[in-house]
View 1 (cartoon, rainbow, N blue to C red):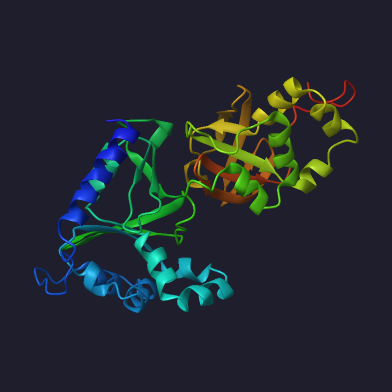
View 2 (view 1 turned 90 degrees about the vertical axis):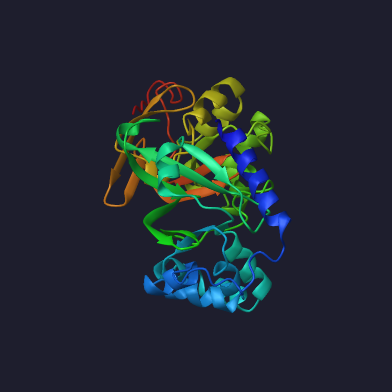
Length: 325
């Protein structure tokens, strides 16, 4: 079953389940003891457990479900900017919106993860956007080889816990409901992160603001400072030749969803067919020699990594200035 059909099937299944009985998650359910809230407390997920209580979701997640919860660690919450966290905690509706984005209204067992394809989306209880699951296998295989890593919107799945009313997958980041909303496209990300030169190149090439086919792609986007460090006149010469500019910028694109947790040391093909060297060591990643300074920015078309240098081939440089991978 392909990703679209799978997501459609699951969405219909959830819609049927949620619509059939609006009171199905009543606190009167007493069928088991190790419910999801109990599992959170027993496994040291104290911050999430407290927030579930604060948002009034204990009864829901103690109901029959079944549910799947992607549970951020206490350390994951510590990474949130204190002012942002304060705003969230002062707005119960916003808190509930974020927490329900971590919940799927059916079971997703580990066997399902290991049997599925590389990427698929699951509808969430929050309702406005799905979560994106990426399955990375040993040896970079698509199927059959053992699962090496599973991510949720780029967050690493650390542990799998069984509750009597579903599953809990412990993850190392807090998920953002805006990540996979339709308006969160590549151009929006470039604007948000101040990547104005990269956005200008998109504009010059006439790139659509939304990839209507939702073809998965990964962008390694240089900072404005990286473009400013180019030899004088080089960027202008590229902007004056759209064919050359298109080839140049496509060396910063890779087909597919390549979150940092799925990248491995070795060669990777850019969208234009160039072989680019990737190095992954001690939490640091380089792409064609450029350092990844901001990884794993999820958007509806894929993922963006911000890098600190521009990739150039010999063809991009003047004859007396050569660069190679």
